[in-house]
Length: 114
Length: 111
Image (cartoon, rainbow over the protein chains, first blue to last red):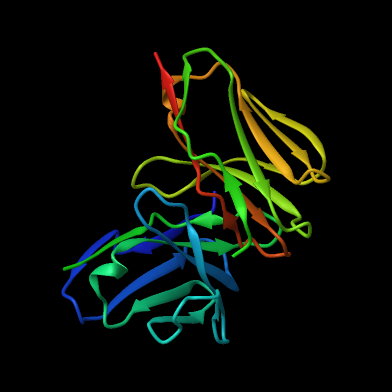
């Protein structure tokens, strides 16, 4: 089946620094990818829709200047958490859309900001 | 965010019993409905998808959809301890697989 690879799986960073998370579709082209965030014991919350070659679309309440999304190719979307703070510590998951089939999720990235 | 509601549980059932998980959604424009299973610290994995009213069966799993009442349910027959996980209900409202998730129901299957 289709595979979506997310990297890194875990990252610890200092408060105030930026962290980049990559999401790759390994065996299909994904014109659209999605980024979710999951706090402990809560569900996945859609953050933004990443569109290849155009600006991302953010859900209400998500700061676009803090969560920078770049979808430079049909197989890669990146999420950069800028000026990270402890409250940004969360589980970030991407999914890639292959039209007319199920969505494929990455393995997730556990971000801890200290 | 579109509203998708689930009972957080935990729902405890004995091994071999039927587990019933329920979900309601607010957007009548929702077109597709999914049940995902998520183990702690892992990404969700697809269990069932359902697109039209009625029942859909796949092995021990049956999804039920009622668009008029805006609810979708998942039945797990012959529950096994390995079914213990959090079950997420997800809906999407457009062509793309952009999901809005419920808060999840934690299922415990006791041996």
